[in-house]
Length: 218
Image (tube, rainbow, N blue to C red; front, side, top):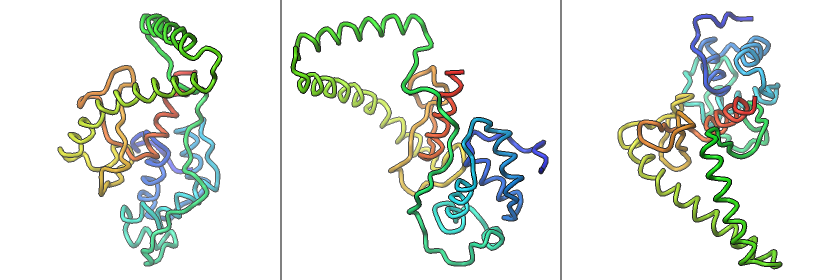
């Protein structure tokens, strides 16, 4: 197995894999790569189909422009630059052991639980035995609260883009347009602000979020 000492730590499997391919000039040893992934992300579900997905995306897909012709040739990518983006094998992510947010602050949890209790009482009074009405009211309240958060996030995302943050801050993938780029809070215990946010590609955002979930549950 290759020596990991001296190599920077990686926030995502994607970042590790892309860096590994660069470091080996495209001469990838699957066993060596797997050992590095397992060492850095012991809870991941890494397997051969995941490497096949990355190899396809490097040689003919979205990551191709991040590699030299020599690296692509070593991977068997040739000179065909026709992109292939349709694949049934997803990028691997670290295993998540819970669903939904957890309030780490007991004071926040206490207040939040009381607010939820009042909202549920109001739903009971408004909907009565009408399950469809309850569903509609629940979705309406949820969607409006979600829109409130989106209104906060949108200008922060645009500001970061405008000042030059036009690549994924985890894996380095360049963005050509802002659509599909996701806003990530560096410190999950704090709210959305320019200082606490960065732009990530969707895959890295999902992976980092999954790792955060696992760490919270452990």
